[in-house]
Length: 228
Image (tube, rainbow, N blue to C red; front, side, top):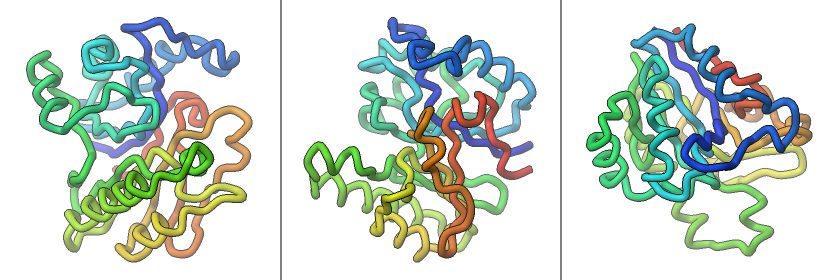
């Protein structure tokens, strides 16, 4: 039994959005994901850190979810900025149930437990949102969602999973970082950064939190093992 993380699968099995247009690093990425996951066991848990499917709604994302469901272990989904299919928790869980998707759940306004650890997370906030016009209401909602997830951990040690990086070379989101530090988060795993922006990712401990990029192309499509 082990805990893993990987983000930005960008699946498009139910729509036509091949990722190899973004460079040779994405060639055959679905096959590479399937091969990498084949080494996982049914008791393992993988957190998918956003941008999971290009589908514009749940029905268009169904083939992507079926692919994910066939992969070994349990999968916990965090919302990404391109997850247009994302809706309410009740609708998503009902959709998964109605379609026999038994290994998928969501990480949103809640937390899950892995052994003695709490697995917390939300989408987060990033500079792209500010450049398109800072929406204070949406931003505050993300901070509230993160705190709700962290509070649900109780007194357990916490691992946090975001889509957006809370810090980046030349950028920090102080409100998100403050919540991570206030709740004693040990490590934070994030996605969203691709290609040339990998070099601007923050890896390692800053303040009291360890930060780790887990975008699929950064990991060469192999989930990152976090805990046994």
